[in-house]
Image (cartoon, rainbow, N blue to C red):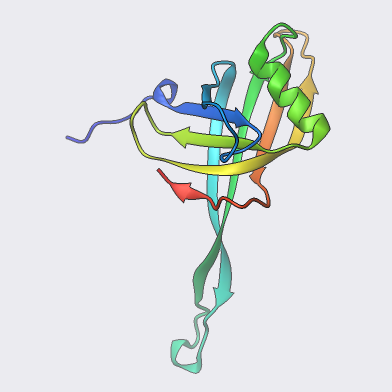
Length: 141
């Protein structure tokens, strides 16, 4: 039987300034409900031979990472992401399925930093990351 991975085994690392910046990646411990989306755009490949069916081929892969963080002004992780959002600076991100597992890395910018103030829970921010223009291409790790 194959091993299954619980969600809490996943790891998300970041580095201020991007992949090529000096310093080490830091494990983001203030993240919950992390989702990584990899979706391919479609290129139409329908021919008369495929009639009456439409066919397509996967082309460019779009990456996106979404997660929530607890709002904590004393937390260095929260401060780093808040600063990166307002300054529109890149973060190097490594997304792993588990410690020492498989993943993907790229330079990202924050496209959403949505503050939530629910009555029955702690305040959180909903964060959306998308790869940005960089001299270092996304890669599998």
